[in-house]
Image (cartoon, rainbow, N blue to C red; front, side, top):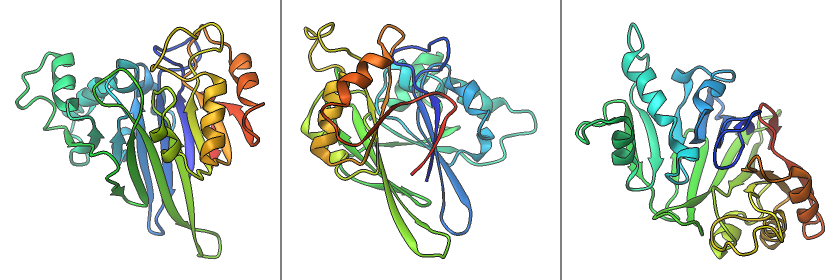
Length: 265
């Protein structure tokens, strides 16, 4: 499984990165599949550096804050108005129950048909897995001030070089503060892609919104994750600070996500 960091700046796009968006690719032995986790502000332009939009097999939304979903509006335009027609059917989109209505309202559309002609919307059911090609995705409810927010556990079984099936797991925190659901989602993950928007000391008075580097590291350690990749870092949060907070509490490899970088899992 390959992870491409399309966008990783927290809360709104930064000068060097769009907001949250992550492209996953994996091969099922017959073809390469591509799925997207979140499509936040500014991500639609950047993702075209790595894939044709018509090659996207599915989109998984963690929650409905604009920095995680709003570029679905632009993708709606691409699907609906491409000269000569869109070359594939509706794009499957998994997300919170309000996703279809929220996107229609954001674009000024009537709720019926809204964007249903471009996207095949399905609501998450907590801890009920969905499968797209080689990807099995399970949502875990997490601690963020919206009606529904999820961490996503993504499991893939791919053939290695000699054809032997190999299982790999990536967990993406979405947006959350510390909670049991996050740790369960990240249990024994090969890579834990975890937000660290806050800093210890500076943001101590804000509860149930975001993690610090320290709290992200603690969650990774409790889950037994193998690698920790910190993401969703706003322009006013220091990458150096959140890295320094995470390292003393997590014994594995720690890094900060950078837009345009690829990771093999």
